Image 1 (tube, rainbow, N blue to C red):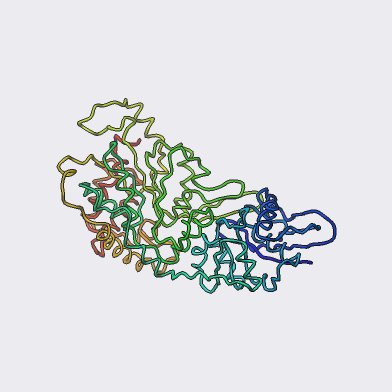
Image 2 (image 1 turned 30 degrees about the vertical axis):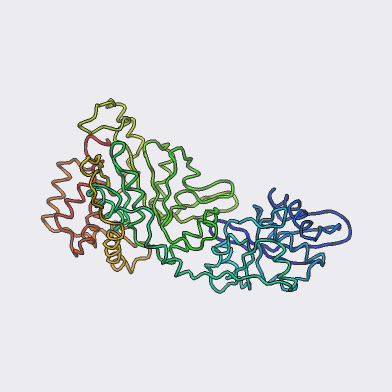
Length: 512
């Protein structure tokens, strides 16, 4: 008897429906075809034990299972439940008349329990697209899949529940998630708050500007000056994600199985902080079957690189193209996968190997040659993509011991959202530009016109501080954001002068 059951394979952030054909015939043997990997080949042992422990058995006949399309490689243990139900239905151990109306996925334990799978959200989206009545999957992934409306999602804990459902002796509980309610519930309770930061008002101001315009930012300062603490609080002042952004972000995290168990839509912007020993494949994504890297996992959020010069130079260089294009394409011989990677880069570094260069109270421990070698790990083209450079100084004792709490993240976020709304209106007609940091030369000419005094100020600053030509565009973008925060239609002299202060790494004495 031949039975067809449906599962799904995930490539990139898209799912492909897999038809599992189970044929039981005279003879003996277990044949699994259709390019399965080792995890799927081993499934026969898991299935045999799970069926045995639930009062069923693998039939002692010739079992042929084809996973179509047969030329597409299948990987992972998520097909166990699909195969097991196909075998039971084909051997007439269960009456599963409407089994082909459902997409079924899940990894089996030996007692018939179900383990979570990866990629539940893209699979659910595909199931709805292809008109399946429902999606049966492990309970831990049910909330994630239930984000997709117009699809019945059933979270199950054991294979027996599924068998009873198809036999008509038991029911399955539908998982229903109010996406909007869950989404808005998580918005106003940030884990890290700027109110906890003592002093550092000027750096908070830089963070506000970076968040308002989507600018990349680098913090330079001695150890213990608060660089990491400030960076971790940046997501709390970013504008809330739209439902579309939240769905995109959850999709990427779902593919690598990083969505928390029993949680639905990701409402908080991601904050990724990889260690400096990371490889370029782990950062950008890749592998023989390409998986998203850290830059894609931080899509619509923040990628924080602590101690930037400690990262291998080639690792930093592979970020240049994704920073520009806001997506990364990984090519292999048989297929190409594109992952979105629109993130804000936040980097921090000590000014010298010893950490105390430019600190008048600390001993000089690094020679000029050591300094140059240390700073030369960061290339000009990478710095070119960082709009704001800011020096962080240690917090004095008076500020540390103050009882007064600083301004909260929610207060700062209100101003950031107001500035972003101005930008949304400004770039409404442009498809790929949503905020100031994404402006090209054409938009700079149109939206960043300077009056005569501002031009003179900028010219003088560039000559006196020996600022590089590449700093010019960045200063204009940042000054446009400062003007937006002040709700000013035109860029004024004080906006330009503040933006000039945020190019410290372009000056003589820093990077050559």
